[in-house]
View 1: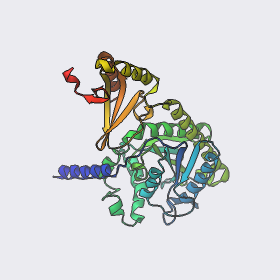
View 2: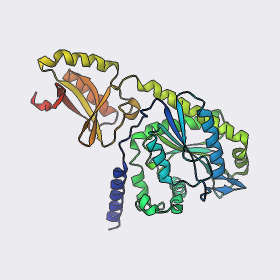
View 3: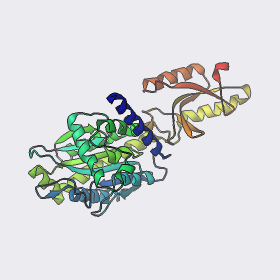
View 4: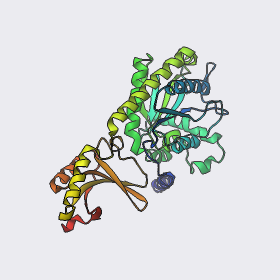
Length: 366
């Protein structure tokens, strides 16, 4: 009976999360690379407060410094969830990023525990690593919802103390975990090499502030204000400048990596070749083969970083679904090889489809 109840809870949460999914692009359609900077806590939610240091103040100071640095970079647009000491609900922070069609969401926090010894940075992404320590961290960050009005409605009965609630949270952002991990690694590497801080590494768990962001998202713990020495560093202008600079370089390195992988067109140079071939063989009833790798209610940009490094991608809308295809060839044997490659990338349910005169056909009849 207990197992059945848990399964029902998870199913209801998954259903709710799915209904929240909007048709937003994973990569900004504007000319700018949009970064949403989120200073954790604020207003009546002070976050951690130890040794005279306040998390909400340090987080905001670092965000404002980081934003000032990034605003000087051509092609980068910065949006803040807050620029003053105000309380912003967790769901609104994600909503700000989604409505901006942002390319990145970076939430800044400070750590704190009862033990004064721990120190070092951590960067968190959405995931299912439900160790006891990770769960307690997620529980602490998520409990801020109890300060919000109508939190039962906004979070559909989510209980920060319930592992069953945590299971469903990791589902929604599956499209963006790999990119989030890539950014998180760059951030932690820079904290070590440029800010000269101790890194406690990349962490994964279900965090409400990033659960409904439809773009790569990370939550950064700058260090422990419960450690007097680290708290003093983070509260200083010099310390905040070092941390902001390390974050800035990591974000720009991530942007440059994405720019190099995107290419000029959805399907790349190879598609131009097959496009010409399609036109040449239309009258001969030639079939163009593609590998369908996914179908989703979300409108994702067919870019390699969204589909595990695959290139030569395309999509079409059928009813309320977007269907995503890998490859385009007139050769059936080549199409089968493309399917095997897609499966090796994790798309184990991928299958071949055919098009003739621009219309989908039943290839089993040919």
